[in-house]
Image 1 (cartoon, helix red, strand yellow):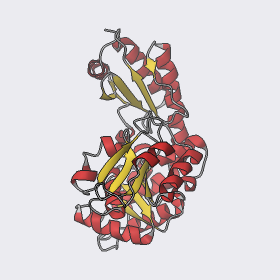
Image 2 (cartoon, helix red, strand yellow):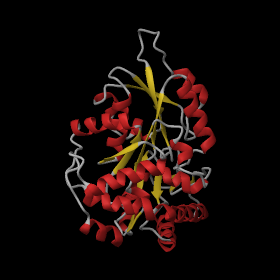
Image 3 (cartoon, one colour):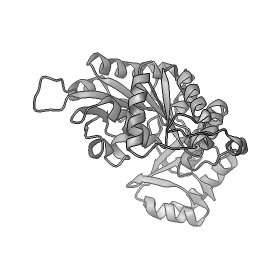
Image 4 (cartoon, one colour):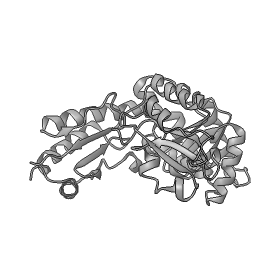
Amino acid sequence: MFDFRSDTVTQPTEAMREAMAVAAVGDDVYGDDPTVNELQDYAAGLLGMEAAIYMCSGTMGNLIAIMSHCSRGDGVLMGVNSHTWRNEVGNVASVAGVMPYPLDDAAGCPTIESIRKFYQPSGNVHRPITTLMTLENTHNGAGGVPTGAAPFAAAADEARSLGMKVHVDGARIFDAVARLGVDVKDYSSKADSVQFCLSKGLGAPMGSILCGERDFIDKARKYRKALGGGQRQVGIAAAAGLIALREMRGRLSEDHENAALLAELLKGCGIDVEDVPNRTNMVFFNLTDGQCDAQALIKRCKARGLLIGSPGGRRVRMVTHLGIGADDVRSAAEIIKKAAPL
């Protein structure tokens, strides 16, 4: 079975499994787990930030970042196509009590004009004060595109000039770094907090990291406990996260190469592939009237040994990752070629 549904389906490497088996552990709620502490220190240093905290997931990391930056009744600017807006169950409003204002991020990064348009200052008693803006990099909904350091900095600087904090949903930020050949600090230096996933392309079985100033992380630790995210001997998982950060960032370009190959093969089969700048590890395509719909294609492909996904409508997403090689890409393209026609 070829699994292109997401890079969340990656399996831990043998080195990760061995490290997990022998990891030194302690109670992380007490701050006593040495492997978690090592991971947090390493992650903070990598991003040039004061501190970091281990989270169960990226969704939890984003939610706790928003809770830590904002007071209940505040507003937050976020992309209308972003993961925090579309795929995190409305937790910004229902759990954090914060009002989201959706920005145009069709190209992967909000425009300066949209930031200025939706920013709400403190003087209007009828509207929530916007105290935070979130940015996503790479941007899943826009096709897995990485935002360059310059436009990213421009958006972040605009938000900060208006008095807002900036949080980055960097679930796949190391894909952006690998694709554009920049340093992750080019992004983290412009942000007040950054969340990134240890799973997905980095291959760890679970966990995300939230980085920021020490006082911010202390506040995040309390919210993590309140949401049930305090874990005990979680160094078992953190050991895999250390290997993910130290050893797996360098191989992300392989996923990008395989995604580029997949896009070209699908185009050659008459598939309407979405062209995006600086493609990372995602390929989106749209099924035409002469082809079956997305759900039918998913079923047909599964019957032939290929797992794919759809964000909705006739749009299909395929993601390359640690478990996918070039031969798997060729096989997948051939399956879709046979399964797509009506």
